Amino acid sequence: METTFPTTDQRPMDRQEFFRLVGIGVGAILLTRCVSGCSGANTPDPTPNPARKIDFSINLDDKTSENLKAKGGYIIINDVIVAQTKDGRFIAVSANCTHQGTQLVFKPSENQFYCPLHLSRFDTKGNVITGPATQALQQYTVVTNPTSGLLRVSN
Image (tube, rainbow, N blue to C red):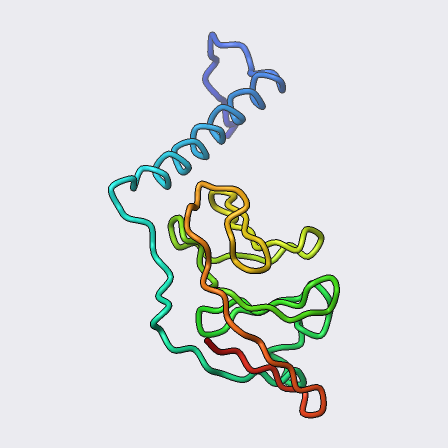
């Protein structure tokens, strides 16, 4: 028994047309995602809570904190992002963007905290460099004890 396929009057889609249609589809999905992410204009921006007590220690010899051993490395713990700057200082700020609460990353090449969702940027003290965020991040004190290998983060 032989399988036969019905003939169509349509010409086959060429490669350029296929990629154009796929590109339009992907672009529409990304645009929808961005618009829906920014549509919460009625929702107030999250505000760092300076009254929240932060006081914890990080052992640099623990596997969970090994990223902090390298300049430019960072970890997020207790809603705090702790990073080692290019010049070897340890810094700590609240881990979520003050625009819509997205978790931040540390960009060591620029010594800045960066929001991957809407591209807000903050300096090493938590001050806004570029928005849409308008509020600074909560900054925390980091005390280093080189003999014990501990960092103490507090406010």
